Picture 1 (cartoon, helix red, strand yellow):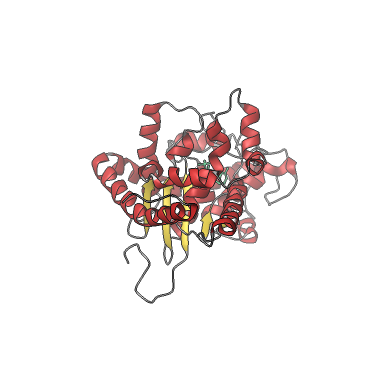
Picture 2 (tube, rainbow, N blue to C red):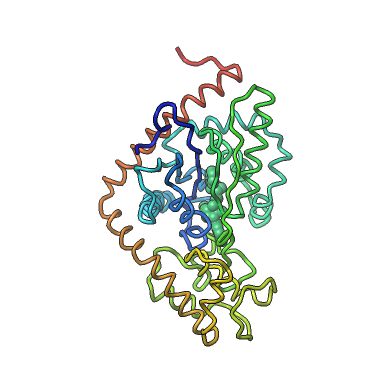
Length: 344
Ligand code: AMP
Ligand code: TRP
């Protein structure tokens, strides 16, 4: 069925919106925490998925690299299984309503709410100079979500606070300016919501560290690189293969969590799969096999899509057009409620 609101008279399908930044290399945490869930859940819902290039600008970017990574990420999302017949895939800056809505939302958002965001506090603490964009980042994210009357926002655990902020902003706006926005809810996966670094299983796998050898599994890495990274993953001196809350055993739990998120099995059946394994070497080999099994076809399809950039651009143009058809009227409503006059 074409993207849209469904047949006339049919109940409204749940609206799904999520985004991913084109800066840095996409890794297994992004795939298991977000992209795989988007792909698995795309039927029966009305989906909007966005390559959020404006969010990437909150920290300095090399222009050529950003352009290349924006196309590559769009191709990667398609290669991972997003189907343009089931979802609207577009680039954030192509739909100018996002930046405009962000301004209007800025004007109802108390500064204190932004200072409380843990991701902002972490990032600001690590940087010498902090741009206003870094503080404002969650308001732009709220604009992304609210423009589409979004019900569900599938994200990894680290984005939960930002989705709750979007909800708070929506509630405040509705109170101040009348019912305008649907209140969104974050949807966090049970497995894969927080994939940890292979080199340090107490810190989450992160895009900004993805270039550090042995830290992440990047979706487009060579199979040999992946094999080596998993074989060197930090574990412990024991030999028990089971999930555990013990921080000393976080490495094994992380590998089992990766296996679980890829295979969609329960913890119990994952542990049963490893009942006959001989030590951590065996665990790592089997985890590598399931990772390569899911990533090999994605890599192949990505290469095919990147070979035809004109077709990719056409696809993104169509996505932007469909997104504008929803975001435009919502932005006009926001402007009208705030007392702006619309151009004649
Ligand atoms: P970002 O890398 O910040 O653009 O994140 C894109 C999506 O991946 C968001 O939904 C994040 O919550 C999710 N994500 C990022 N890192 C991880 C991780 N280590 N484990 C699980 N999900 C993650
Ligand atoms: N801030 C999100 C991240 O870094 C990306 C994002 C931007 C997003 N806009 C969004 C996620 C809207 C969900 C919905 O992961």
